[in-house]
Image 1 (cartoon, rainbow, N blue to C red):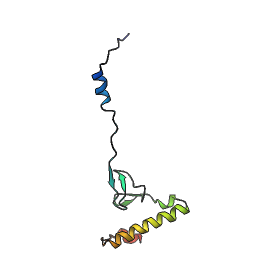
Image 2 (tube, rainbow, N blue to C red):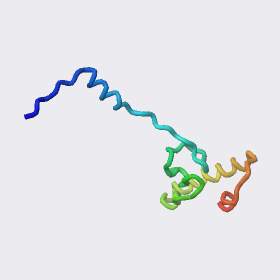
Image 3 (tube, one colour):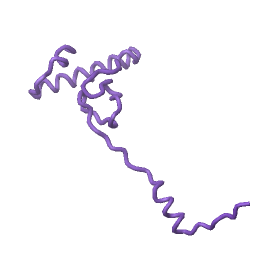
Image 4 (cartoon, helix red, strand yellow):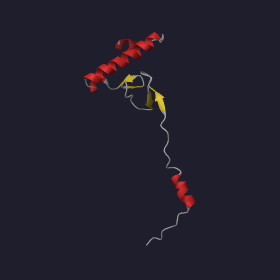
Length: 94
């Protein structure tokens, strides 16, 4: 039979010091400028970096799709009004 060792308060506290939760760090989506977790697909627009990975609008029902299209259209008009240069990919979406 194994004799159980007694753990001191210091040992217990040293073990527990690594159990704290860490704050989630967000980066900004390159397409829609919304906060997104690093190395994850943006749930708002479906882009990963500069590539469109999933079609977000195809997974929504009719009411949500219209609302999402309206938001994306507003985003595109705002970026055009700011005088930002548009690349070929953004021009093809219009």
